[in-house]
Image 1 (cartoon, rainbow, N blue to C red):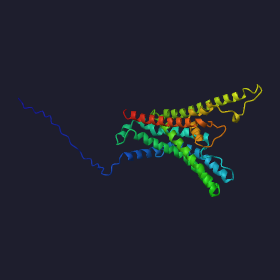
Image 2: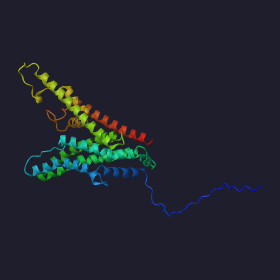
Image 3: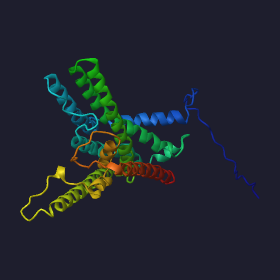
Image 4: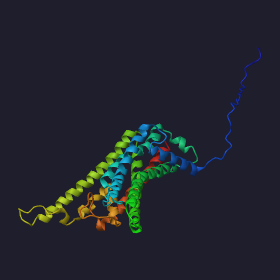
Length: 323
């Protein structure tokens, strides 16, 4: 019989393609988080991308700075200061920040979710919580730029127009609470925006979810305020006879319903907490009444909202890391 010539041995060859080994320092977790935060901060303003990515950040930033420029021109002509630091054009600020957060928050989180590149991030020596932490820090910083730079422009224009060390010091004392109010806005808006945007990988859906949340909650708060204000006016004129007209809103007693109507929107929560902490208050507020003893409730609801959004954001990425 012929000999069995079948061979089962296999062999392989390793080819050296000439790639150079990396012998430099290997950065750790902190450096990875810092690099991711810096990249995300740049992405919030469209840096490193095409011109279309910069349209919304540029328009919103210019819109936020226009009141400061107008105030500087007015004060240079001898007029009084038109814009306050703590109450920096509230309607404009609400609208501009709604647009900025709704458009740019999905830019930071939705793209990675849709592209399913999160496993590549988590393959590095970082924890699951490091990714949302870096995104939150970056977007908070971006919101701070949008909120605080216009205040600094306002301060610069006002200081140039006033004379005397006392006037400059008064401007500085007024600026500090305004910066703290901006910080409050930034930390809360960034948490809300990123949490809602992280619910879907589709950027259009994420933008719609964020915008609808801000618009609906603000509308609800304003409707409740209007309903309670009308009820207070009707109660004030109930005993004055059929020919009596409605009582002036400024002279109408405030009922508890008017004070708690601002608990349903982040923007009215901001104003309530600001006034409760000693910020400028008015007899008839534009979008929220002075909360008085309900101020602590405003603060607790705002803290709970921030904590819930951050917890949801971190939970979202713990789940995403497993998929």
